[in-house]
Length: 271
View 1: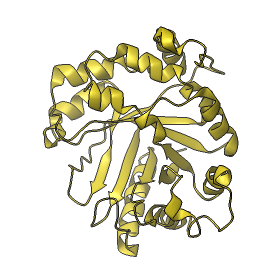
View 2: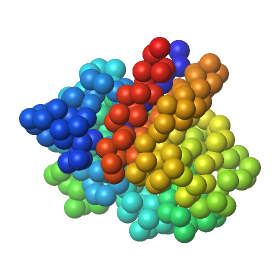
View 3: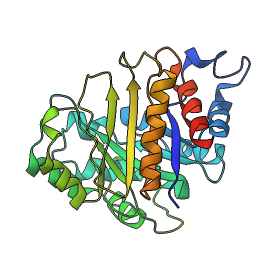
View 4: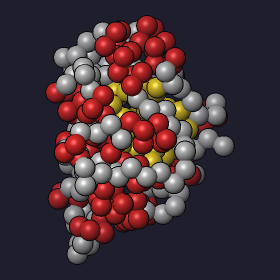
């Protein structure tokens, strides 16, 4: 049965304390609080740096069994290396502890910069490197750099399929050619709602869909009106009815709207 995963991009924001998070709630308990009210969280700290295995295990244990974590792939791969010569960097990422999430590991999202246009050879080559199972990710992780030795995590509790989503920010990706390439590699294209800043590519290329909501009218800052929430609820229902899982993450965190909008969307879907 298809399922909706509604959540937020990140959860540790000082401005949410005393608003979404009750006053006096320990920062260490914020993830558990969010996980009680949402279906999923997108881990974005992994975009900025490799996290430690102990962190991944702590996050895993803070959420209920049916909770799912999406994971943002590292900017070292997407923005610094710009998808070139990244096999070792991917190995380091998968060795860093991602696999410790076990059955709570959801899609891994790869966001490319706005000044990186679609180059079929480059992008297709990158997508071909991505492991499709947790066993494949473990095998790739074993090729990590030696500096990872002693702080890696190379265990899996079962061999499960891995899901990948790709969020391009250059308009040249909005093409049949890229959509065909993504579909051939079982990669979902992220629908980015960004107040018109980046292309919103709404093309189904895999058996699940993934949306990142960066702000309805103002990037990262504006909230979503009831009408806008209704629109996204209908978008989710359409895909659920077609048998697809739907992942939706609110990234409009600057003024604290994200968790409230996520709760509102989740309530619409449960009504």
